[in-house]
Structures are given as structure tokens and as C-alpha cells.
Length: 270
Image 1 (tube, rainbow, N blue to C red):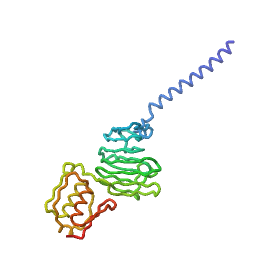
Image 2 (cartoon, rainbow, N blue to C red; image 1 turned 45 degrees about the horizontal axis):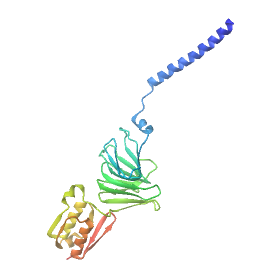
Image 3 (cartoon, rainbow, N blue to C red; image 1 turned 180 degrees about the vertical axis):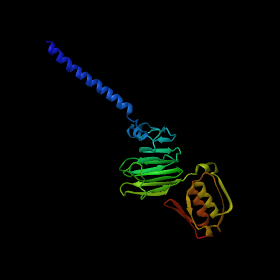
Image 4 (cartoon, rainbow, N blue to C red; image 1 turned 180 degrees about the horizontal axis):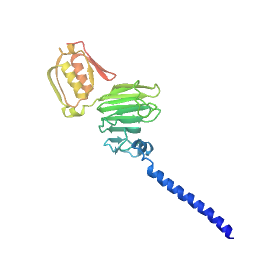
């Protein structure tokens, strides 16, 4: 009986020794193993998802100070790790972005099959679904839009379109192409919002067109030499850019049209 007891005791002691040894080994491994880097943390951190199921705009402020106005029935996903090398979000639906400037950390927006890259600016993206067209409209600053690459932040330079204020680009998933243009209703640049009223007294049409171009940030192409000889008197208050161009064109028998990201103004001279 004593022999049987001693045999069982030896087995229990061996098992206990193994358990203690494993615990000590694990503790030593944890003590000497390196802490995860910021990049490793960013790769495993869960995405934050904000869904606007309401009927009004929902404002989302990111940790970098960027602000997103999320339209109803839209969804925003982002990895909000404070020390990430890039700021990356994904949009489904429509949102207006005011991105905090940070030249060291670009801001990327994935929407449909497009990639938008900015450093600090304001713009609107409409991406109703993966199989539908996507549009990006710039309010301030400069934005780069390209077809989405296989890597999350690689810009496809072969399809890249650079947009400035009052320009937009539309991605057509059927044709698989990006088309840039002047927006349908250009607005005054923020620094010119208090200069909406304009009055011209016997001023050259060339000068008027140059001032409109500066006020709205939209390039207006015209024959400088010919239109410098045309002079008109007019006053603008709250008219849109195109209504103002209508007035000028009618006064000298000219015309204009949108041509890609610029406006072409033509006239035979005076």
C-alpha cells in the first residue's frame, strides 16, 4: 500500500513541477517580449463605424480635429488611432468633409471604387453604392481623386485628377472612368463671400472676367486682347456666376460654355 501511495505521489509531484515551470516560462516570455509598435496596434485596432439612421445631418469630429457632416442613410468607417501614419476613412453615402491640415499625415477617403487624398481642405463626396457613380466636389483647397488601387493608400497616378474649388469629378463604374468639370452652381470662395456685390463703371470686359475668375476660383478662358476693347457698365448683387456671365455676354453679343474644368467665353469683339 505504501509503495502504491509513493508511486501516486511521485506522479502528482511531476505534474505540479510541469505546471510551475510553464508558468515561470510564460512570465519570463512576457517580461522580455517587445511591446507592440504603433503600426502593429493600428493594424489590429477595430474600426469605428458611425451610421446615420436619422433624418438630419450628423456631425462627426475625428481625433485629429477633422469634421465630417454625415448625411442621412450614410455610413462612415475609420481607424482613429492617434499616431497612425495616415488618416484613412471609408464612406458609404454622402458626407461633407472639413479636413484638419497635417502635411505629415495625408487624409484618405475610400468611396465606391475611388480614392480621394487631401492634406487639409473641404469637399463633398457622394457615393450611394459600389455599383453606382461617385462624385467629389471641392469647396476649398486642392484634392486628388483617382481610381482605387489594390493597396489602401496607393494613388493611381495614371487616372489621377487634381481638383480645385468649384470643380468636381464623377466616377462612372460602367465606363470605369473619371470625368472632371466645373460645378453646376459655383460659389464665391470663402475669402470673397463679403464681396458678393460688384459694380463696374465703363470697365473692360476682360477686366470684369478676370475679377469674376478671382472671386470664384474658376478659370475663364477668353481673348484678352479682343475683349479689352469692350467696355460696359453693370452692377451685380446676389446673382450666380453664370447669371453674371449671361449679363456680360448679352451686353457684347458673346457667349460662354463650360468646358471641362474651365469656362470658355467667346465674342467677336467690339
